[in-house]
Image (cartoon, rainbow, N blue to C red; front, side, top):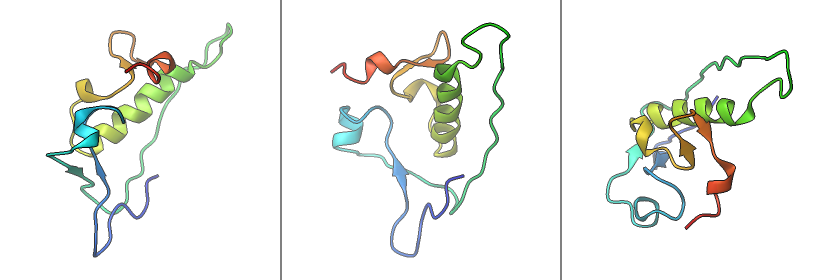
Length: 95
C-alpha cells in the first residue's frame, strides 16, 4: 500500500532511472502518482529447495508494479536485470 501519494499542495512523483541518473538529478518529466492511494497484491513462488523464496524476484515484481502505477514502462526500472526478472543489488553501487 502506498497511502497519501498526493495532497492539495503536491503530488508524489517518480522519475525514470536510478538515483544517480540524469532523470533523477534533473527531472524534465515527472511521472506523478495517478491516485492518492494504491494497494496491490504480490504473489511469490515458494520453492521446496533453498532458497525457498527468491527475494530478487519479489523485489523486481514490487518495483515493477510501482513504476507501472506511476505510468513508466518496465524497461526504465533501475537496478534490474530484465532477462531474469530480478533486482540486482550489485548494481546499486555502479555509477
